[in-house]
Length: 401
Image 1 (cartoon, rainbow, N blue to C red):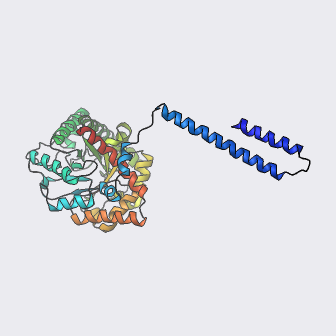
Image 2: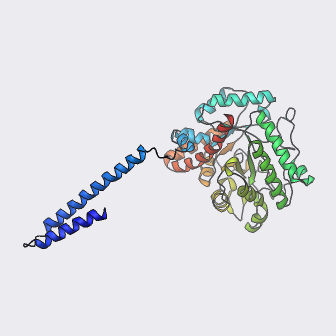
Image 3: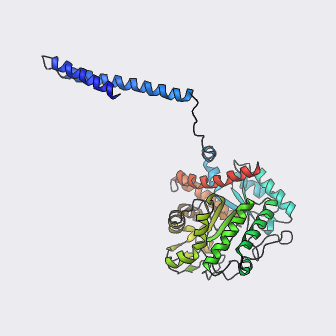
């Protein structure tokens, strides 16, 4: 290309020197035309190169499965993937059909009210996916921590409490119980367990220990047990509720520990798992507590400083962030249901969890849809969350083949 242009410039220059009348304009025009001609020739060469590459069948990077699914989803389908709900009944009913058809809900959490027997739970989970008819499977979740937080105890033997396992002093026990728990849950159609608890020093038997190093080691082993069994799990309740004095089911609690103390203690188990494990195979559940050193105004569930600045940017978590139940008093008593979902999404949540109130579930969905349509929430922000959700769900599809 440079050779061609140089040749044209020499031609124009020599011709210009021979011009006795000193008429420069016509030669400038000629020079420009020659350059355009050369560019056209070059483009033709590039086109031939492209055709040659295709003709030789050189490898072409295939489109990402996540991107392929995402581009074929409607906005309503995308928002549905960002909402997980609790339902009433132990089989498909009209309310469940409506919620799945109208709102494309992406996940269901089971409670004792939904669970009569292993066979019934398994069929219910299968039927929910059949009724949903979505492009990816539903998350079918449960809280099966062990101890006092266990479901269907009459037909599903729960693990010991995390406190009891921690007192045993052997981190391998955390691995073994988590793996066994995961296998039992998978057998009845559950694909996500909201455990292990990564909080330090809770006073309700739900924590492995009041020592952050011990909690981190036991949680790490539990995480490996779930992953070894092929079940998605969820660390909770970021950034740690061990210092809380008010049950967030009832109302909000404020933790006044410094950022340095939170870093060294409460955050330690979360940081360890984020650094060690595949972030696409577990979620992190964010609490409803306030942390004055991190965000004096907002509960963690509604805090960009905690979910985006701390969890995403500082700790580097790339997986799915889910809220704690938005029907809990710490949130529901203070924020209108029409605002909860929008605030949580803008703060950085990927999935909004509403376990008990059909009215709240619908308001969360509709408010997010309206916020996107009005421009308050961008399409890019929705796609960002849905990509992370789809990445997890494609693993479910792979496992089910």
